[in-house]
Length: 293
Ligand SMILES: [Fe+2]
Ligand SMILES: [Fe+2]
Image (cartoon, rainbow, N blue to C red; front, top):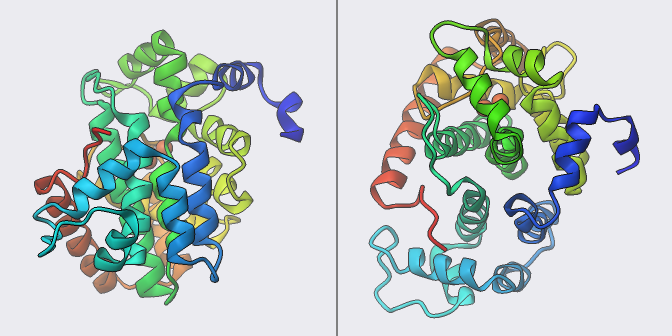
């Protein structure tokens, strides 16, 4: 990345440790699926090839395609069959979920925080962002979904590469201390959003997504529609107690600003909330929020 030399030393230090990490191990498949999402001409064969370069992911997708959630009448034995039976979009989402979930697998609970709780927050944020795009903008929202899934990747990196600082930050946040982003900035000189943006850049994610990840605790006024949607979706998960969502303390103000800027009616918000809660409950019941590949 061109701007690497201009990054704060703390962020550069984390990027230097990324090679051979779990975080970077998802890059190939995740960027492959992102490129399929961004390509209207992409075919089922392209998706099959991306999934099949990753045997554990292939096994996991087949396992889930054969689960009671999808209930096929005949056993599904390959990815093409899964795409035909479950659907192109559903398998794309499922494979992306499972691959990204891979970096959340260590469940080290620290107070209210755990990787599983953060993962639930990220999946719910992805679902909110996608439904806002589909219902309000009449667009597919695949990139909004992906941005939601990955928006707190900086927090995963903090836990992995700066575990002592991470514990201190969580300790400071507990019991009415400063907000997460404030505590991060005080301890490290940067927050998980800035670190997430640097990681997304390092992993060559699309620019709009990279910027949205960096700005997801920022001020919505000058933000892109994707960023505003991500800010709103992130707030919605906290308002609905879906997992553990780190915050900046400015969320309620930003929530109202995003609702206003995006022109979303309260009634539509309530319908989206009901659908996301239902989908999360269904995913939890069927084990789709876990990764065991
Ligand atoms: Fe965040
Ligand atoms: Fe978040």
